[in-house]
Each structure stands twice: as structure tokens, then as C-alpha cells.
Image 1 (tube, rainbow, N blue to C red):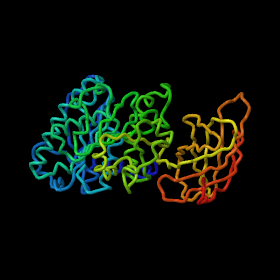
Image 2 (image 1 turned 30 degrees about the horizontal axis):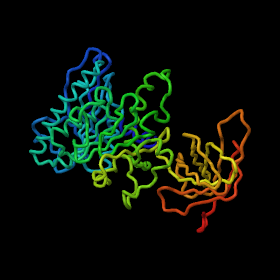
Image 3 (image 1 turned 180 degrees about the vertical axis):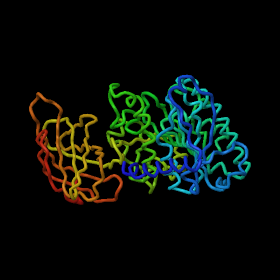
Image 4 (image 1 turned 45 degrees about the vertical axis):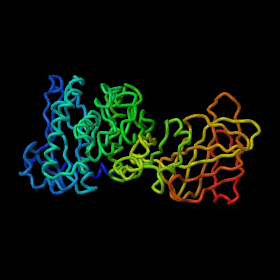
Length: 451
């Protein structure tokens, strides 16, 4: 949010400069165009570090008139999806600007708003194949002029993800990378690989899923498929239809916001390979030994660092959770609890970490956990912020049973282990937790002979 606050004046200034200098801009249509239907037209808007505030409309056939289009540089294509209202994507300039901040590339915004703006979604789906043929021919001319296909990165959103796949398939999987942000599900689900994105479409394909129960695609499509918050019901998004249009598009659009966060480096999201979101939340997938010293892959732009090992592992599903607002990243800890109650108890825990006035909160409440005498219960606690040095810690135990007697959990030991930093585990011994009562304490380094 801070980055957006900082960049908004810059983007507005850039827009004014574009109009003043006669720069080319993304096609701006309206619901009237969508109602009547639009015929496909593909416009390619070039941005580089030399003209980051002023787009150049590229010819599809002749590159000689564009000295800023340096084919010895890598090229990133940004491809939007379905535009039912005809308006330009609000995120496209920020994504372009962040890519240019990261590295010296050609950024080409693929403007196919004429073709994507149509109340008939099926027609927009049909247009993705023709638009992909257009892009394929353009990239082949780039290759003929000296561009390396391995240096091409396509970032496709929704329908744009599958369009990227069609281009990659046309080029025999030779392009370097496709990043697919919540690939569209309707009209693509259960289709064969040649009718959708698949891992063979590029040398490396990374995918993010945020709306698998509505507008997005559910099954894996790449070398690594990230499922944010299980791939559905993103935190902070409306839960009822009373919220209007945001109810339908918030989960789907969150994919772009998460990717922007990976580019601006406000925080790093570590993802955990796992068979299911349930097992991930249960803390059964916290080991990342198969990835060596780099640990579990991070979501987003920098995941290419893991591409070689991911290609060896085959298709990998990875899970992470986020906050409702930026910064989206959360910090994971393993919490191990041993109790000495005679009877088995079931319940939930809220854990808080404190340092210098900062409080981080983790609610381990996706399901009721079992606490059995002298048996270690492992919880996966994901905190809303990172606390570098834990001064104090609090734990609240609850059962969720309003009408039953209150329980007491007699804790023999609670151990807190940071999942990313190589830090000494922190412990507290001999603790009494009365139901629904927060207990604050100062943890100490765990004893070497800890059981």
C-alpha cells in the first residue's frame, strides 16, 4: 500500500506527460463497446528505461524505426485478460514500472482490449487463439532480428495466461518463461493441453491460483503452481454478493496484487510444496530438504531461482497464506506443545509475539487440534508480521464450546521455532492455560536436553 501511495503521483504524472508528448496509450473503451462487441485488434506498447513514461506503439513487421527497442535485452510481455467493461487494467502501469525497476528489459504491454471487451465471454475466449497467432508472428520476427527466445518472459493474467501458453506452444516451448496469474477456468477446465496452458509451453512455467472455485483454473498447469490461501477466498475480499462487483472479481484480481508485491520486495512470501492445503495448514509440509540450501521456493518474480530443481521434481504444488492487505507476506513458525492433562483435550490456539511495541498474531484455528498427555502436538503458526527478536509471547487456548465447562490445559512445554531464520528455538515450561484467558510470558532458549 505504501508503494502504491508513492507511485500513484508518478503514474499520474506519466499519464499527463504521455498526453502532452503524444505518447501512445492503452485503448480505453466502455461498457457500450462491450455491449456491441469488439473485433480483435492487437496493439503492442513498448516501454523501456529510456521511455518508461511514454509508450511507443510498435509495428508488427518493421523494427527499424524504434531505436529504443534493443533486441539484445530480455523482453517481458504483459498480457491482460477479459475486459467486460472495456476499461484499461488499473494495474498495468505499475507492473510495467516495477519490471523496469528490477532489470533493464523491453516491456511490451499487449493491448487486445479490442477483442477482450465483449459481454460475450465466449467470443473473448475465441479471440485468444487469433491474438496468440499475431504475437507468435511478432516474436518470430524478433528472433529473425536477433532476439533470443530464452530471454522472453510472458506474464499473462486470466485469459492472458492461456494466450501466453498458445504463443509458447506455437514456438515449441522455446521461450524462457511464462508467469500465469490466476489462469481462467471457464471454457478451459478439463480441456487437453493444446487447448490451454501447460508446462511444455515454455522452458519454465510458474502459476498462481487465487480463485479456483469461480473464475480461475483449479488444477496444476505449470512446473510450479502456487495456491494462495488454498487458491480461494482471499483475505479481505467480500464474502457476500451484497458487495457488488468486488464479490465476483476480488479473489481473481488478487493474483496481480500478490505478483506486484513480489516485484516491489516489500516482503518475501515463502511457499511450501504439499499435496493439499489441508496438509499444509496441518504443518505436515514444513520440510524443504529437497531444495537444498535455498530452502522452499519463494512465490513470484524470483521463483526462477528454483527453476532447475523444480523441473527435475516435475509438477509441484506449493501453498502459502497471506494477510488481507499489503504487505501480504506472513511469517511461519513451528509450535510444538506437550501437555500433561490426564484427559485428551481438543481446541484452538491464538499466539502473539511482542517486540518493542510490535505485536504479531497467529490464529491456529483452521481445525481443532488434539492435545494428549506427553504427546507432542505440532502446530503451524503463521503470523501477520515478522518479529525479529521475541521479547514476550502470549498464548490463548479455546475450545469453541460455549455451553460446556471451561477446560484448563496444563502445558509441560511449548517450543517456538522460526521456519526460515537459523535461530535458537524458544521455550516455556510448566504453563497453565485456562480456556479463553490470555497468558503472557517471556520465552527462554530451549534447553539442549529438551525432550
